[in-house]
Every structure is written in C-alpha cells, then in structure tokens.
Image 1: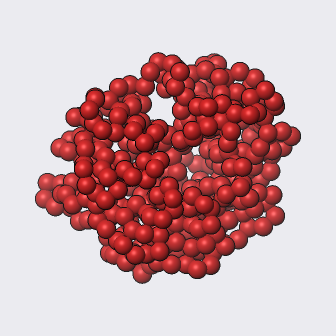
Image 2 (image 1 turned 90 degrees about the vertical axis):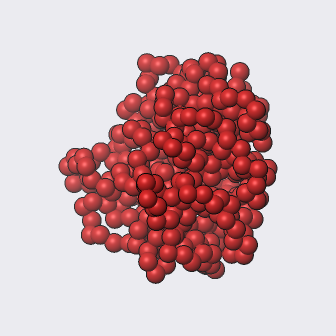
Length: 394
C-alpha cells in the first residue's frame, strides 16, 4: 500500500485561489502533495494517544459584529489558531478582522510566519509579513509592501524568502526570521513568482513572466539564483509558458509544467537546465511534487485525478493505485476514513508519520491513526466554514 499526505497549496497558487484572480487554475483549489518519508514508515507514537501541535487557518463566516461575510469579496476575515493535540485546547493567535494567508510553521514549532492584509471591511492598506509565537503572546511585523506577499521559511528555518510586485521594490528578497538583514536578490521589471528553496537552502528557483508574443497568451521562464544573490541563471529559454518548478528531494532535478499547444504538460530537467525530459503527451497537469528522487505525482485537471510517473520518462503516467491512501476524505483512489463525514480538506501527517490531522463538514478537526482508526475529535470551530491545517514540526 502506498501512503501519501496531501495538503492545501500555499504560496503563489494559494494566493490566487484565495483572492480569485490572475490565472485560472481550475474550478477547485489545486492541491499539492506534502512529502514526508516518515509517513510511509510509521511512527513511534502509533500505540499512544496523539500529541503535538496543529496550526489552523480559519476562514470566518461572520464579521465581529455578527453579520454574515458577504460572498464575492476579495479579502475575507481569517485567523490563525493553534490546537494542543493532547489537551484538545484551541488558541486564537491573531484575533483581528484582517485576512491572514500564506502561513507556515517556523522550525521547531516556535512560531508561525504569515502574510496579512486588511479585509474587505477595513481601510485598504499594504500587505505585511508577520510572525507570531506559538503561544500568541508576541506578534511582530517584519515587512510591508503593496500587492501580494507570500513568506516562505528556508529549510533550516533561519531565513524567510518572499517576492514583492510593487514597481519600486519589485523582486526577490531574503531576510532573517526576525526581519533583519533584508537582501534584495533580483531587480527586473518582469518580477518573479513561484519562488522555492532548494532542499539544502543554498539556491532558489523562481519564474519570470514576460510580455506575450503573438498568438501566445503568456510566456514565462524558470530561473535559479544562489541564496546570497549571486549566480543568477536562466534554466529555460522557450517561447512557452513554464511554471510550478519543484525540486527533487536531493536537489539534483527539477519538475515543472510547460504549455505545449493546448496542453499543460509535465517535464523534468537537471538543476542546471540540461536534459529536459517530457513525461506526458497530453493533458492538463498541475501541482507536481516528488515522492522520491525518481518518481513524481501530479494532478490532472483533465480528469480530476492524481497520477504518478517516473522521472526518467521511460513509462507513461499511471493513475494512483486504488489502495493509495489520501490522508483525508478526498478520494485519491480510496480513503481510509468514513465517507459519511464528507471530509472537505485532505489531511497532513504528524512529524513522526503515525497520525493524520484532517477536517470535516462543520469545521470539525480530527486526528486519527494513519490507517484511519482511533479517531479523536480535536475541536469544532464554529467560526469557520473552511480550514487549512499544518502540523507543527518537532
């Protein structure tokens, strides 16, 4: 049996889905595969009650005055919560009517970094990058700018990567997790998006979008740059649209999406841009992620299914096996959870891979063993019809 954990996409795709503009990624949010080798190996807590901390981003259904949140807005009110799994206690860390999004745990679970923007009922203003401690006692503003921001912690947890789109500040930036030592890595009128750290934290992949050429709606290429701002290198040079670059676990290869005629196809290349390999002949692929150094999964918007394919391109993609377990209720070839719960979001594995956190209709947050047994109801968040969850790292 193959086990994978699926989580809601953050980063650039999450921003676009949340705000309902820019590229149309399909009728539903595109889900990314959250990789964790421990998830397949089991964990030391398999025979104990679950412990640890779960972060939750909740989308509120009502404003603070009790009125319903209107549909059709851009920035709905959200808050970030933490759940003590052993005690089943919930704490609201942000407690405001702003829109918090694009959030990530810092190393060791010591805090959460996120983007924040005034919601629809507030006076418009810049977007900020904030960090809040896991106990909610300290919140610090690290950076602010016009437009979207999406902070991404480095693998070792000491730095934060983000992209700004404002005319004067447009570019790729890195700063320390306390907001100091901000460094601008790129300066270009084309800007950047889809930036991701290499597994060793030494390099950064990103995408630049160029003015379209005749008969082509969009055009973009993939770049890589060292984390200190040196070594900028263009990996692709085509007249097509290339996006969603994803590092292999060892950092030696890159998966990405390229438009070919009407299709959005999955490709791989070496980290220096050589040996480009096409992995599929037709379809609409998105959300590529590596399950190992030799295998990739991706979501097909053509048939609304997850597929797997070898990175060498010697075999055609195959749908995920019927016994593949999605870590929540959304069917990925079958689910170990009770379908009567109608799980809305797929779940995420605990750091040791023994437990899965997921949520169901009515904003009920659950924790269960990875085989779906021994379920524990953590909380029923009346505030929020939609949740995004992430287990704190150890």
